Structures are given as structure tokens and as C-alpha cells.
Length: 76
Image 1: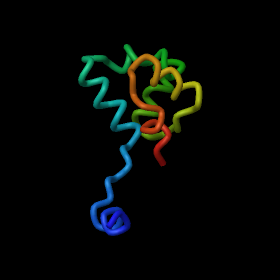
Image 2: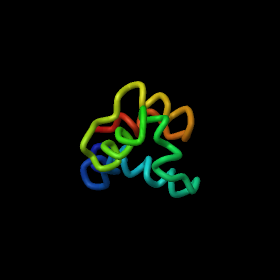
Image 3: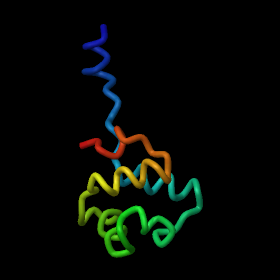
Image 4: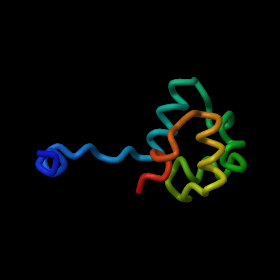
């Protein structure tokens, strides 16, 4: 039964960038507010526009400050 559910009702893995954007919206944070977690405004912009991948350092900071589960941030 579990295999059937996985095959037919698979829950899509959350998208890390969407998770970050949703949390920013929930907390009314701007890109400038979260820039320190990415290592600066340029990096934040690149990640949020999918031009750069999250690094381990970014994942740790985002998890710590925004409370997004690590599993969500490393979802591929």
C-alpha cells in the first residue's frame, strides 16, 4: 500500500527557493533583510533568482534565522 501511495500520491519535494520566499513573505522580510544569511545582497539576489545555488554556509544561516528545515533547503 505504501508503494502505491508513493507512486500515485507522491508529495513533491519542496523547492528551497520557494520555501525561502514564502518564509520571507510570512515574516514581512525584504531581500535586504535576509541578505546577511546569503553573504550579501548580490548573492541573495542570485540565489532567489536561481542563478546561484545555496551553499552549506547559507543553508545553516537560513535554517538558524528563518527556521526553515535543513531537509527543505537541501531538497534537490
